[in-house]
Length: 208
View (cartoon, rainbow, N blue to C red):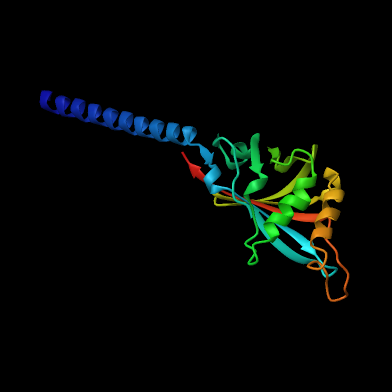
């Protein structure tokens, strides 16, 4: 009888120990999930744009190869993006132009006639599934509503359209069109540079 009691006691202790171990494992796993953060890194972020020329609205693509901001973290992609302040050097503009003349014209004839031409600055707000970029250019701050696409919580793409008149930049646009007058002519012989510019921001979120 004593022997049976000892066996039962040992078995009970084993069960309790297993349950405690299982509980500790679950607690550790829960804490790991709770502390997991999404991190946005500047080197994983790109800012591309498409401007348009001729009356047929032919797209001209380019990008800013440098985006400056401190690494931002959050418990979700939305939280990581919300409150992100950024700065973009205009000097990093790049259009991959074969003639190697377009970039200089845009910098001098467009950005060069604006106020505060060294940097584009702003911040991103992402609240209640609505994302907005507040952009300062030519001494004017204006919002750009952004559509958001998140793939498997990792690859994030933000797209929007800015109208240059919202930043008082139509004189700069006219200056650029003058510098590129013949290059912006279509089949109809009309030279035109459009006011709207499509923006695409892409970033890859690393889990920390």
